[in-house]
Length: 255
Image (cartoon, rainbow, N blue to C red; front, side):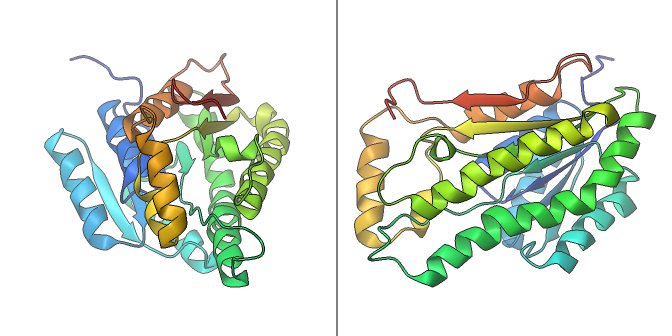
């Protein structure tokens, strides 16, 4: 029987109910990983889990609001209880609320900081000891922590000040963490998508959403599966290889 690169590994994917998260969960399952799916929309999670089961994979859905530290701890522990280990964490959950500082609300800023930063920190903190253990005990002899960032973490643009803040901060956090964990054989990576056709724009106000949609429709945007391919590439390298940063823009994208 063909041995897949992630056979025996366990992955936890946040924001797994749609878009990049759902595509990544399906791709990692195809590579052999058992996958824990985390998001707030249970019906969507259950559909992704069914998709994985049809592919012959194994997945479990955990409905959770990981902006709450206790729930982040719970999903990591629930993953361990179900599968016995944790080899790969994909921090994908996030929200993009674009608007000028003059016209936005403090609640919108707080929502982005809560999900894009705080939730990522909660899950990461809970997962690190188990990733270190997995790296020392698995046949792969390595574990992976992948953070989904954005070109907004590199290129500042009007209307995206706090979104860019969350993503550039994520990049700095990941680089520091990479240096801390390199001796533990836990690879820390950042994948920075450009324009991807996902539900992310649906959270915007009507005017901003229309502008974002025209931008997406004006180019051949990336698909969620394109970013899933990138994440799969990162986590399936031999232990001697660490892909610490991957910037993936749409071919037509200039920004």
